[in-house]
Amino acid sequence: MDQYRTSGVIDEAAMKEIIGIFIPAWYRRLTGTCCVICLLLSLFFGLSVKKVGFTCFFLVSAALFASYPAIHRRRYYKMAIARMSEQAGSLSIRQESFFNVDGLAVHSLETDGSILLHYDTLAFVRESRHYYTVMTKGQQFTLIFKNDLNDEQKRNFLPDLKQRCPKLKVRK
Image 1 (cartoon, rainbow, N blue to C red):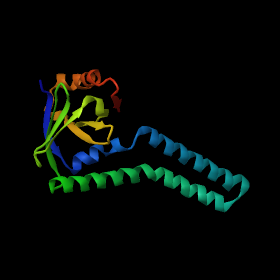
Image 2 (image 1 turned 45 degrees about the vertical axis):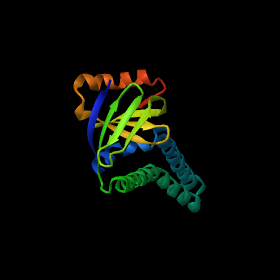
Image 3 (image 1 turned 90 degrees about the horizontal axis):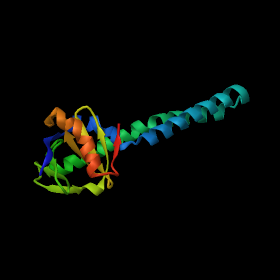
């Protein structure tokens, strides 16, 4: 019984759309909080204590904290593109995926390799404009192409997946 069978191309445009999945929301909140704290400390040292060195230090720290998620995203994007190039010899991979009773079966149409990701290894799923991105506990990911799903399948996809994998987290 194959469900939610989709196929498509993972390329640079797809990677740009889903790359945010590699930076958790708690991490973005933490760096944002650190950025605000550094800005407040720079204001304190600049206005009340008049210490220029501390003010500059905290301003630079705030800039680093603010840019760190973007730096991470760029690093993960380059790493994913390099892996894709190593795997398929090009900057795109055609894949087919479907769910069966054991888990998510992924078949690369480029390398003719297949893998079965069991339901207990799935960590979270995130929905974007064109894809559902499924991430495993071992930081492997695969895409479910929404354009291959009808409206009923799109509505039922997350509840069905959550039913089969109760510990699965759904990220927005």
